[in-house]
Length: 476
RNA sequence: GGCGCUAUCGUCUAAGGGUUAGGACGGAGCCCUCUCAAGGCUCAAAUACGGGUUCGAAUCCCGUUAGCGCUACCA
Image (cartoon, rainbow, N blue to C red; front, side):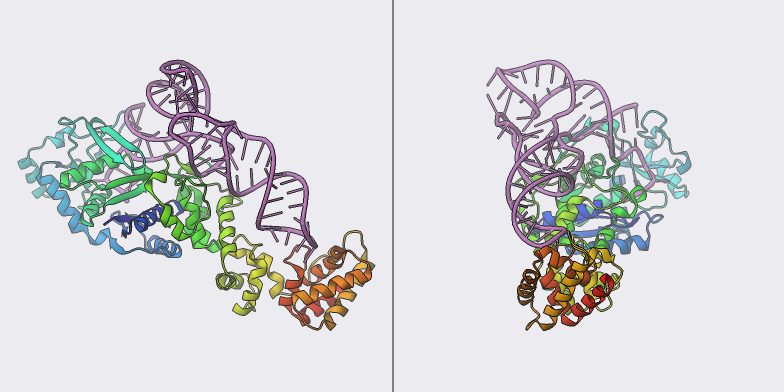
């Protein structure tokens, strides 16, 4: 049974890179019919915050993917300590009594180990420990007995590193708290994780992990490191330098559909290799394999002015268009409310949705695109009422005729209205565009709007006539 | 500095010894059309550089350059 884990540390909000790692894990597990474990890696008590934790849940829940099991490392410290001391008992770790402040820096060369502490006898080590002297437990990298640590990665292939280049990393801090490396491996072993999919920034750490798994006497899980997500400035995506533009909630608040966001991120560093772009969740699960993951970092195309990658926006628009009107209306509701349309009822939005579906790219666009369905257009420039090759007289003529036709139309549906208005234009010897522009501006408050007749139908006779009258007042 | 990884249009990517180096976003143009969109069609746009191997290299090898990552008692 495939078991994967997503293991964020609650030291900041969930950002797009973390979300992608989660998505890859989820897709892989679902493709295999396996289990997704969410594990909060909160061993760094100094930096953890509840706000971060909340933000991680908030972001993950928005994705609508879900997970199957949940753990917090801070509740599993005994497992970590037991693992650390088991390694110590095997002679594969040693106590380092060097005070934290005196930890060897690395001026020029790399710091590898502290020979004095490494060679301490067991008796001496035990004596100093029981005397209460603080220490950090370090892994004893086998740099004499072997020359290479080799890992096999599903994405990067065979990768090796000389033990001579690996430092004696810490397992337990002087506070007794486990380090990330130890806690992560001990938990992966205990939780029977079969596959580790994580960011490539961990590739170099993996040699340490391979050593820990070996010392623990367990098999190293299958590994797949993911290429990193980069900012346009070339740096690795970071909460600190790139700010909220990389927060998952920024996408949610702008009106991305969760699945469109998932679709976009799935395509960063992975390809179905068949030119498919817009894919349903089912298709993504169906096609996702480790072979499709590539090795080079992907840049997300955002700027200070526009935080969203154009391709993400396009994909969102595509998914929006694929939504049925009921679903779209339901998702639009909170954004309409936020735009200040207090009279935006589900019924009204249901009528509006088909008219704006192809004209919005983000759900929040409802505010700019559908405003005249909910508020009276009053502040437009009267000059807009005047059509091409026309004047105020012509505009007034068109509006007056429209008011007449619309007040007497036998029914107020778009087909009836279109026939009536086209006939009226012919009667006035006006081109349809000349006839319709004044009406459109009168009714919508601008020249660019959804199809006119459907719009009139949704607005209803009373509203339309009142707006035509108002416009007539402006041109005469 | 040491070590590891990477390099195809502006961006995401396909092609993994033989292709006019393909697709998508974005850009430009045309068509459709009551405006705006959507849709259809067209165009511009790439194998980092230098050496090898080979009849033939984007693809394999070496080097250079560049970028990223790791080098914590952070994760």
